[in-house]
Length: 284
Ligand code: FES
Image (cartoon, rainbow, N blue to C red; front, side, top):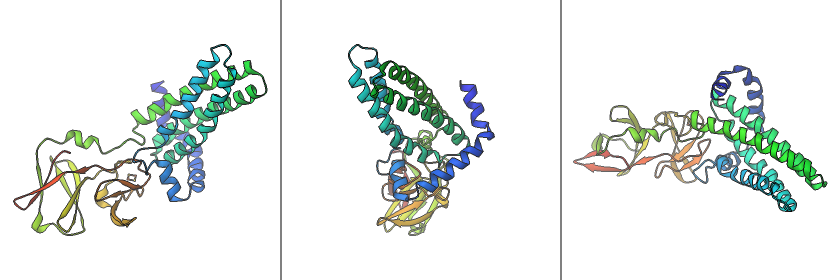
């Protein structure tokens, strides 16, 4: 299975269908606020993995009830709940998928296809149960559970092996050594300008001075490692934010909160102090 998914990552034949679907998703989910909501910007955490808890929980519970006598009615209710709640979870997933890198989109396409088949089987299961054909409803439900479990496995590959929608910058912290690191002389640090510096020789951070306050933030964008140091500072909702030059994610400079997707994760701010006129930072 792992070898197969590695082949899927590299299979350019999936790109035609993927590019078409991406256009449809981006063309349909146009309002930025809707896309941000679906990315999980308001939570500071990707929304799709949280939303799938409801259908998965409902479907697994229905499968358990299907194995017990006299539980037709609650099992039908749970299959209905799972099928209805899977739709918004799928929309959030498609919204994330449309902003992934090409190899991730290929695997994401297979993940979405497996889950679409699973949802269709569950819709058939619900229809069968509601029309009194409970044996057929149970059979379609078990088939649906097997298919969405395969989809979940592929989703795990996408997240944990390919790093889709996980915070791409946080591993920088794990490489940073303890103690205070000198970054810049305050006397020469310009106001309201993004400056890039390195900690431990190869961990990039950005500095932004506003009066006597200086923000030090990891430079790699949490979304896909874009260089925030090459981004622009813009005022969004009354806060100075750095906007990633690659796909437009924006992070507040006075806290690191994500205010604009596709990143669903906040950016890490580092503690600072001034020692003998020199700006220093350390691990949080
Ligand atoms: S790398 Fe995609 S928004 Fe920054």
